[in-house]
Length: 230
Ligand code: CDP
Image (tube, rainbow, N blue to C red; front, side, top):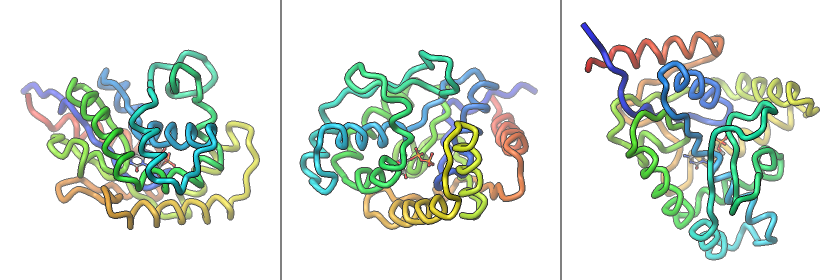
């Protein structure tokens, strides 16, 4: 019996639930494109901050999302990045990971005009197939027709600890309590917004990753992907 993996794997979940680690590993094993939609919301946020556009100015931020050019591509520098992000040609990859972007990205991503602009681009990428797409609304809004939808979850404490470890590995000191507080705020914002809130699709497979290693989660997603028959 031969089996082919589903051509699109949607992975959603709250902050630091393991989407990027698992998404990248699964895409490598399958030879698929890995696409992190969070980078696009972060890019709009970073562009607004850099240009002095007030985050509260919904019309201006929406206009910005519709006009800037965001490229997410294979890493152009070997410095531990998963991918390179360009805004109108400028490399902003690491600027997307700052605390100020973390603090503002949920407000930006709640704006319907921002979501419309980015969802359109994400659908274009998904339509090419052979992609593992990660985010908050991939299974519910961006590609609800994806044959395999995964929702990764973990307790806030576990997720905050993972994010803290990530920052440590990058040589950034951070206060674990502050990370937990900021993460809870972002999750609450993302889950309660009107447009495309964070939630599992009704047909998503929910994996509670508390106590699981990254490798175990990858194996579980691969097992699910390989169950698809071609
Ligand atoms: O890596 P982490 O889970 O902390 O964040 P991310 O995936 O980079 O997403 C950053 C923010 O972008 C989220 O908190 C959401 O507000 C927003 N986002 C979204 O609204 N929809 C998506 N498909 C992806 C991200």
